[in-house]
Image 1: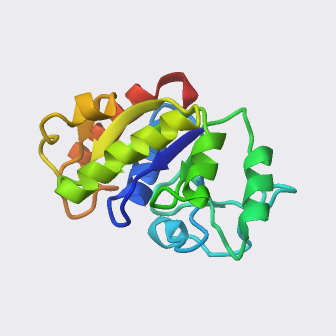
Image 2 (image 1 turned 30 degrees about the vertical axis):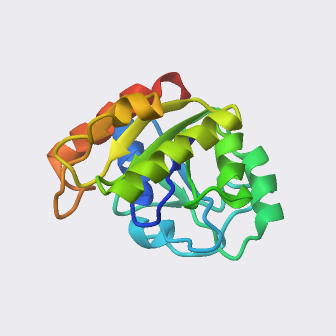
Length: 202
């Protein structure tokens, strides 16, 4: 499992999760993206799927919907799940296909739970100073719970902030500022580079 995390809301975590999943479809994989943000779930909106039935520990694959926005990607919305239901679902997610976890922002236990469950983490940030600082903190949180950080995706940027790669201890991948990153060729190439960094965990 690959957690897609970040310290700030609006940094592009959900779009990055779907973009990396789309890159995996191009590699003939069938990824599942799960919404782990129970307080502000929006994966279903970005992916163009229904909000319900939501996370389901009994059969999470059956509860997922294929995204019309990123065909070939299955999406498991949060629905009305609580923390206990999400924790049980994380344990029940399949291990025979790529699974990406769209994590909540911040450094709370709710944000740490999916990062802890993952095999690796991609941290997402924008170029703003606060977002960069939060990205470094998120990378530290991931390492504190034993999850390696494979890459930092810098949303809506032609390049990565200076020193970010060293501060976070992982390669940075700028994702260009385009109108629709999930349909743009240059953004798709950036998401493919993120998938490359994530390696065997995807």
